[in-house]
Image (cartoon, rainbow, N blue to C red):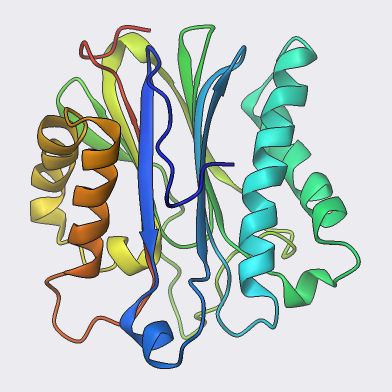
Length: 246
């Protein structure tokens, strides 16, 4: 699992990310409840972001295990000859329940976002819960998300809740970057600035050497410009060095 202090090795489809505790958790001396993972292998390149629900007793544990379960699901899905995207995401929650044992799902609830650049030339993107999963496809930003719920409910979809994933498949040749972000980042991104944000990640951050890249991204998250922001913040990225070559 990629830790905050270690950069992913370069691959044909590069990946990187960073995560920081928000001001609210720092003030209370509580740990960051966001987690991210980056990995590459025979299956391709993968990034995962998970946000442990803050009201839950073992939120950080749930988020960390969500990342591990997703990687396990991707490896098994690939080894089995792959299949549909439904099959891939359907593997994640059972593995997550196995990973969080002996703790109860209600204490470990966590969101889960993933982007997988598979060796078959497709990129699979899926989202369960808050945050942002997006790609830049033919120069335009496309988000993978459920429609915003109406009414008064603010219950977040998460692993353990039995909710349905939002998911899409893209041709790698048509995209040059995929971005995952926890809600501490995505909730502060104005729609009219999203394209600029993605371009900054691709053109300025992805081009740096791994250690400098991580330091720059972490510094930006710690110096987040939105006034009175409180939440933990995480970004994970897949970047194609040549504009979408698989």
